[in-house]
Length: 80
Image (tube, rainbow, N blue to C red; front, side):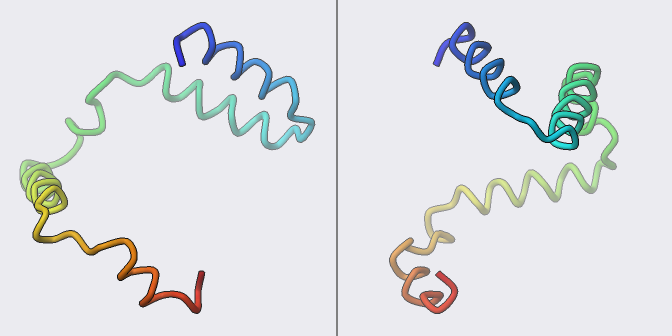
């Protein structure tokens, strides 16, 4: 989707929502996101927290740490 399609779809979505609480939640979310600077959350973290997140991201991207989707489905079928 390009920017124009995203905006059109988003406008259509907003127009279709009748629940005022949901609309207000969307509004607050978008307002806070549009006013925040990129990277501001990262900059609020301590050096140790940043290091821990980098290590977690590296571990998550290591194929040896991945579990096959079918294996997980078999293990948790009673909840699916």
